[in-house]
Length: 259
Image (cartoon, rainbow, N blue to C red; front, side, top):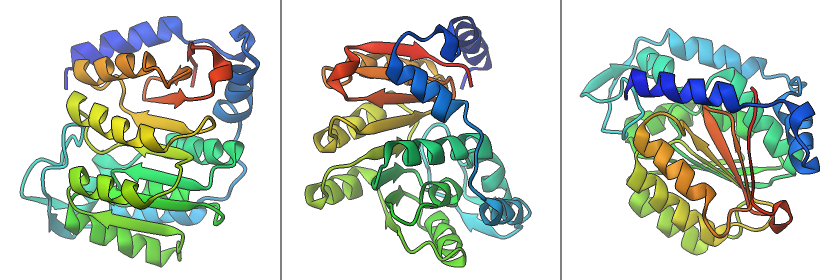
């Protein structure tokens, strides 16, 4: 990760980002006004209480290589509190994903990169949805499973193991996917590979969310190439994350939104 690169990429984002009053597309106006800028109305106290508990959890576990982007994850042993500090999505973004799910009436959700399961719990807060989440590190997956059970989130299924193996196996049997959230491996090749597999399961109302699209030059390269994919008809860049849309009526519109 290059701090200089991130500073430059954020400055570019800051220059380009617009609010809903500068958007001519009705779709993106609604997305910005009703989702991105909307205040959260869901009570997530239980999840945030769990987050606070994890941040102070001194238990240590062995952590396997989780891929670039897990800023403190490379190494043999980490405390759960350290993992929580560095790897969890913030409440600001987790509630955003929660609103996206509700706004789009999504039901079948896929998450690549469970970590300790806080973001997963946000996405599964609507008990009408089904979330399948993938985690490569077994000991981290065990903690996530504890958290799902603690909050009685019975609409979450966790797949443990190398995502290069578990994801294709799952997709062979799955139906269409409404929303996929990618936060597993912040490198160009794995990102492009995972998206290529997921594209076989999207429909016109599906949304793919990519975390850390400006984390590095190779992640920014992946993001820019994916925006040009033949199946992608629109995108929204919120700097920390990016949204890909597949509705042909969007006619190749790409926006940078304030958040």
